[in-house]
Image 1 (tube, rainbow, N blue to C red):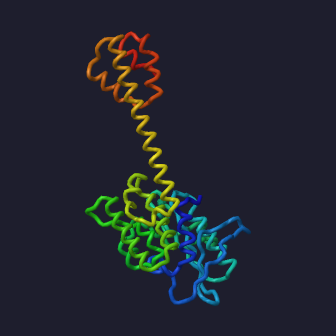
Image 2: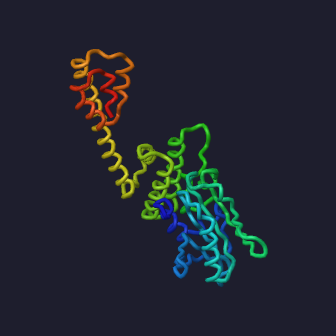
Length: 296
């Protein structure tokens, strides 16, 4: 299943394959073409298929994955075989895993099934971004591949948000030096979306604070507004919970008498508004604090 994080990279890789050559190991000495990847005749559509050479001599099939998929090796084999059938050239498959959540034990780089004489063996390359040194992506790749640096292995000795903040500012600096404004906004938006794979919305806003051009990104606006709304809602709910607890304690002391520290701690640990309302309804009929707290 395709996710926003996966789709973020598809157009970028297709439009700027040379920028990913250093980190994906793509050919650099022949012309490159983004191929039509709609393999609808067999109900399959890969992510990005890059054709190298004129005439075409090799295809590199790049698939990006942000979530778990037990059938992924089989699909990679399907895409590889379909592309070879259509173009009759060698096809190399690269799987880019964006985060540990997408990884699984069967992603070994090799798919084997059947038995001789019908044994099938298929090999593919796996890139686990969180294991890739961030400096390789900041210094050795083209500009369009810079957003991937946000998912790489960060230097030790720093918190993740602090390390990401430095990486993001370096991406911002490099993009501004080499690209037109509209493309910078597009790639910084991609970096922002990918960074959201590994930090909370609150940390995300903090990391990108000070990146002026993000004010032009609808992704940044939507996340910021959503975070503010959620924060307001959480604050209101916390206030209601606190008010319900105080009312229960006040009414309970009048109806049931004083309570020991353990009982009070049990009551003040309740975070469920609905349960607090049910306790409020039962406060006038309960015979003891224990009976009250046994209310479902």
